[in-house]
Amino acid sequence: MEQRILTEQELHNLAMNIVGKELENDGYEFLAVNSELRKNPQFVCTKDKKMSFVVVKGIEYPGDPKDMEFFRADLNKMRDHALKFEARTFYAAVGLVNAKDHNLPVYLNEEYVVDYDGLVEIK
Image 1 (cartoon, rainbow, N blue to C red):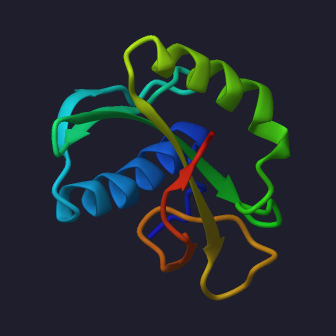
Image 2 (cartoon, rainbow, N blue to C red; image 1 turned 45 degrees about the horizontal axis):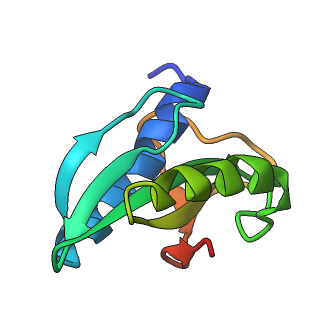
């Protein structure tokens, strides 16, 4: 079987699936889902009659999913937009790394490790 590196879009979709499952398990209802790269937010959802915007970023090693500064301008813009809808804004950074060798990229149909600490509210 030929090894194929996941594309940027595939990494993004993988991160969205991880976050989407968490949202679903936490009782969120989806109003809109957008999987297009660099189009925020990825999820518009509600829970307890409160709307939330969720920005998802798939970050491949050696990138640090806990470093939000690279995305700060986008997140602030999204937060300001969400406030018009009386919505909360969350950032969901999903770190992805090759399970066999952290120096290799993530390959299709091969094991990977997820570094995800859940939603971070942007205030």
